[in-house]
Length: 308
Length: 317
Image (cartoon, chains in turn orange, yellow):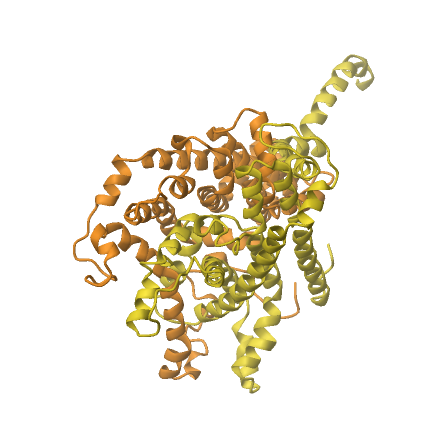
């Protein structure tokens, strides 16, 4: 690829491994003294990490603080509470549609993701391995589709959704989300399929397997890490999606978590902050848990789509 | 033997080959495999894209079919000061946020690339802002930037730096700073982690050789890291610019375009005009006006990529 000695991106190593210095773990850091490393490395890193994580701490703290402590910053230390309460979560779970919204979000995200992965597996395999006439062009077009943002599509899509009678139904989201997910996951899976040795498929072809059998029995089992990456990344994108859900859904009980929190919880009540933050926290937790289990897949999805 | 068999087998053979052609010909097979993905992309992406441009030339409203009005919507927008304010806001938001995201992201990537304890955990934690849905973290920022109970105002007051609460989201300048800050906060992890992936492909022997030759840390960065990282920088920044330019949810959750339209981006303005006010045609004109900017951003990065391929001696495929 280049004249300079470069290494291919080892996706698994981005987070856990030590990268190029694995063989001599100290690297060149012995050239720096400890005080110098504290000032140039640990201090700036600590500041950035604290800023990045503070909003979550604040979200979590607000959601367990009693109301009177929330608004009285002078009598209580605002950075901590000694009397946590689960009142806000209780209100969320038993006095609002929150479980409904959580279920809607999950349902839409899973359906849209499964549909998109199915379509992308077929498309990616066809582009990479069948190499039909114009496969290159189609690959390029799919990449372009990735660059079309939802915020220029939501107005015409709203009229389309209305015409098809899908307005205010989860089906509207299940059918429109794949336009965001398919380009991304096709591109990601194309990268994975390219790494599977072609010889395996040749052997199967000689033994009389059809393309479909090859895809199901040989390619997919070998591409499982890629499938997991694509799946959880698509799921996260669905969970995060806002503008389509805001435009296409109307009735309170049909909404997804992000839209519902912004529209239904924001009222004039000065004590709304506790339940608002509890809702935000509960809406983020499923994704954070998923992320905790699949960090490496997540990163490989993120960097894999950019790598091409 | 063959001469005897052929007349009988012939009709059967040709029938089978027509079916076989659909089943085994690589072009037809490729077509079947592409059908699901293409159906989605054509019906819900390409068609709406064209429909949006068509709508921008009509006076469609919610519940009423529009008539062709040529460029009336655009002429109307040309004289609309709020539209131009939103264009200015969008450009300001995109440039400032993208530049800072790049700078901080690159810096963070370089820091994370060093050897240190708990490295894996640190890297995983850095990515959390990117995982959490934007709207939900925007709500946290909304609370942090509250006019009365802001923790930032409280801390600054106790440090003796200010005497009055800062009206973060009520003042035009502060509101812009706040939404840009929230956008940077959300975008830095993505830039940092992808650049970190790029950094790990740079062989450490290059730095060792350069250091032996007396290169300083800055020279190491400028002449080794940066040139080897440019391909990935180009891609990451294209994505970053595109998604910042078309941002909607962060603004909608924090300010809804206020105060006095100071944080209205083109996306939020088009939502307000099209869905809330019901003027679908005008809203479509605003969102179609984003397309030239997006094309420009894509072109810049595209030609950037082409040039680098050539520099690295790779064939342009």
